[in-house]
Length: 245
Image 1 (cartoon, rainbow, N blue to C red):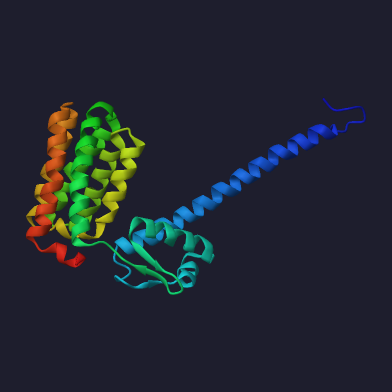
Image 2 (tube, helix red, strand yellow):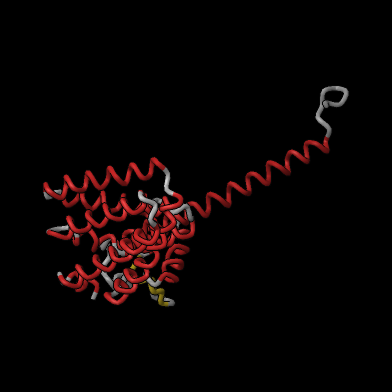
């Protein structure tokens, strides 16, 4: 309540100032980590999409100018990418792209096979009606585009199917892990959906979707696990791992 004369008591002004100060600090911290996160994901995506060659130097100034940021968030992002094994920082020289090897791809698919199986199992319990309907629609559209030879659209639908599947398990931790591994091999996956693999992959998606719809966790897990093994075997068969050597 205002004091006589209409002035707000000094104590309350100080209290309000402290609250505002805390809010400003919180916003500043949020903005900082949000910026670093955006820079990190952009550089990471560029590495995985083949924008940079293996052993190519990642210049902080050039990347900062391209992204419209200072060198600080770029430097922080490069350090984080070094922890992921995608970048090597050599003192007094710079940061260089390491990329991923054929052995890394094999490991990623074997790990994904287990995680996707678990994801499909949990989705049987947690998937929403809307998510299930979207999986059904994706399978239908993918069948159409595969017959037409629209491989770009097929790759986009493949990506969307897995995104919805990951979200439907209702586990933020598992969803985060799977999306990370999924992104690692995005470039090569776009090349694997040509020919008969596109049809086979969508048939496997249909089987996963049907098992989830039937609420059969054992079947869903087995099919999702096998789906990853089939994708990897197809890469080996077509010599696509050579691009990672």
